[in-house]
Amino acid sequence: MFFSKFTKEKIIEYLKSPEINEKYIRDACIYLYNVSSHFKRLVQYFSKIDSLDYIVVPYKLDTKNVNKNKFLKQYKQVLDLLETMNLKHELIKVLTTAYREDVFYGYEYSAEDSYFIRKLNPDYCKISTIEDGVYNFAYDFSYFNSRKDKLEQYGEEFVEKYNNYEKDSKLRWQELDSGRTICIKINEDIDYVIPPFVGVLEAIYDLQDYKLLKKIENQNDNYKILNCIIPTDEKTGEMLLKENLAMKYFKMIEKAVPDGIGVSLSPLKIESFTFSNNSTAERDAVAQATAQVWSSAGVSELIFNDTSAGSTGLLQSIRSDIDVSKSVIRQIERWINRKLKNLDKTYRFKIHFLNVSIYNQKEMFDMYLSAGNAGVPVKSAVAAILGYSPSDIVTMSFLENDVLKMRDTMFGEPLLSSHTMTSDEKGGRPPQDTVDDKGQKTRDTEGNDR
Image (tube, rainbow, N blue to C red; front, side, top):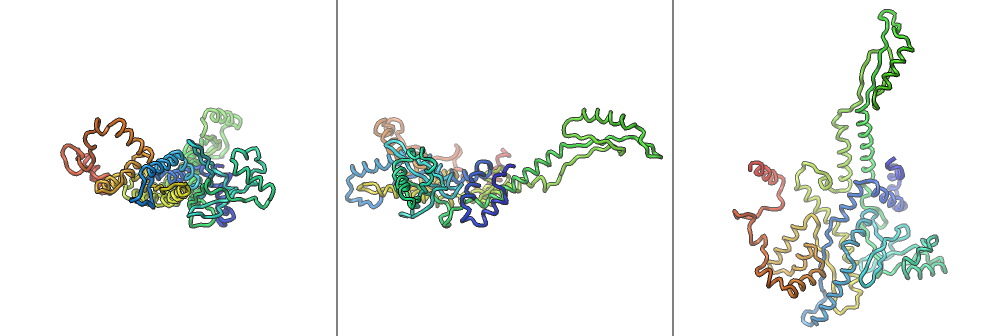
């Protein structure tokens, strides 16, 4: 009953012709996202793996002929625009939908100090063109035939184009203004829409089957049958207890036993039976099916389960997952940069999302800090890894240095870093953050010795 809406047989049938069954496959993934914790965690893992830290970089800049005041003013305007977009919140919604369904179709609504992206029903959207490497999509305005009361909520463009459709039915599909839409597709190498984790679905159904079998097995472990014997004559085999008297005692016993214990009546020897299965293979079936879910998705089960396996393989698996997510982040980067190109500005700016994940944050911070010590201009990147937006960096630097004079009053000397101090009073090189499995075992042994 758990997967009664979309059975395994239906899913397998849909996948035979994914081009013509994309709606049903998408609906199945949405359904499983709501009912399967494993599928939901997988989608959320990829949608949240990137920290979405970014910097804003000028380009096509003639550094010898820059009006610094004008440049700073326009730079601040771009930062304010991106700050209003609240990217770290809005993009998580975009990425969650995209990893679940393959494509996110959205429409932007903004005011001077507010911004949000409305998710459009994918059943009424289709990719139509590519502009500057970014997907555009057309919208099926028949959606409002039975929803005219909601039309005004979607804004002027929808009202205008729906009115055109009512006058001419050939205008059922119309491309929306690319300046106000966002379309992100995970599987860029596939023309049709197919969710990226569709290969996991069958394994999830198998896991549910094994869970059900395990539940039945555990229930059977608690069952017993008490067989009440009726004494018989050893020579003739005739029952020595009258039937009505035997039934009287049988009913008394039947009422006395708790749930899960059955009672039978026969002239055979009394025995008790249990229905437990002590097979190791049976006990491990659920664990193996769970591992198969993660394996089908191409991710390490160590991310989601506490196992005794080493950390080296886990780190390599996470790095591979980060690489997968980066191709999607680059799509988003191009979409934002297309918006910035269309701004009427003398100076050009672009956004750049750093290759930072929640799993490699310290590693990347140390790398940028080391590059900064070598003279590379990465101060904005270092601050971004700490969670500051470019707008935060500008305003906090002004607040601390120019207004509060913290540099002069609170911190007369630079803050100490790992390059200028040791890990303890005894000196020596600071311990590494990551070691291989052998090194970790040595650390654990030394810790136990102490």
